[in-house]
Image 1: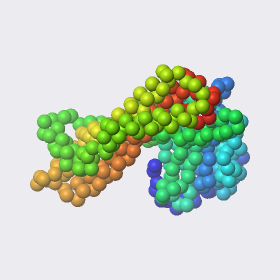
Image 2: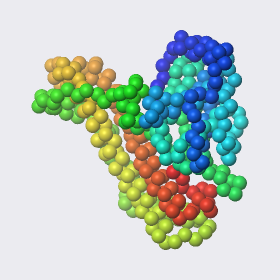
Image 3: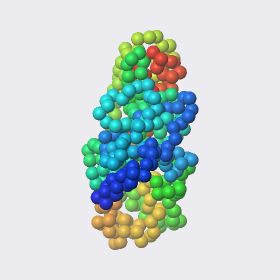
Image 4: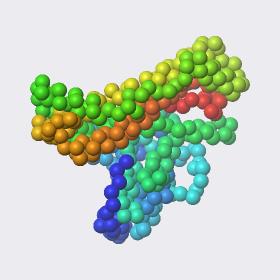
Amino acid sequence: MVTFDSRFLHSFALLAGGAVLLSGCSFNGTYPDATEADAARLRFISGMDNVTMDVFDAAHCGGQTTGLMNNLFSADTRRRADMSIAPSSDDEPYLEIRLKPGHEVLLRPNTLSTGSVCTNAFNFVPQANAEYELTFSWRDRQCVSSLMRLHALNGEVVRSPVPLLNNGLPSCAGSNPVFPAAPTLLPDTPERTAMIAQIIDDSVTEQMKAELAVGSEADRTRLIEKSLKERQQKITFTLPPAYWTEYRQNLQTYTQDVMASKARALQLYKDDYRTRLRQLDDAELKRLLPDSDSADEGRILEVNSARTQYYRALTQDVFKQGYSDHLSRMADLDRRYGVCERLVDCWKN
């Protein structure tokens, strides 16, 4: 999420919107709908001012827009994709697009409203014939995106949350400021390597080192069996023992992933910090070197505070990645056994 205040930018956006309207330009954006018969469909919902969504992929690193909504000088885009599941409410404007199934894109909702610019981005691989809803809203002083997979069966609709992660588009690296080039690292020397290791160690807090409280093995086993029993009670048709064996294995794998998440987050934190420090010259490294004559205590406090915030966000991403992997395993299991054809509340990727 990126946010900054600018009254000029806000005013300029309103004027630009009026200029586009007067020029007769289309408000449906530059993104062309996918033409595949099994294209996925996505509904983008937002009540925020001057909102649009950019679509990036390997062939369009500069992005394509999907249309403008909630602009003072224009009517909302009427892009529709004939989605079979209606929006849960008609209170907020929305647009709909078609996406190529199995094709990775990076979606970036953004708005320019109330004197500030706000945006976030995430990778997305739409599934064939699937329908989704992406909601972009303002909550807790930041803009928030939430993606739901829609599934309907016998008149009943289920909206299942999809974890959102921004992994960028490696094929676009260096093409523009959205996808910066890989950083230039200075050559390693024994002195630089030692300084970097000391700086990283000093930044690691006791909270980062603490193991995740996940209960005893017996507690974890009880939780797995409880989840398994609840699922068995929900499914009213017969599934073979192999299904339930794999279901239990998936729960065990997810539990192990959760247990390892803090250690993984800490390692990723150290790897990222090491990469950043290898970009600095010796003089800057010495400013960050704790317990030394060259240490700049104010700078060290500032950087360590920023690193702590980064670690917290990274921890959330590691948890989301673990759940995303779990979701994929469960969705594949339900797909192979035809569960979604008989149960609306099935696992969906």
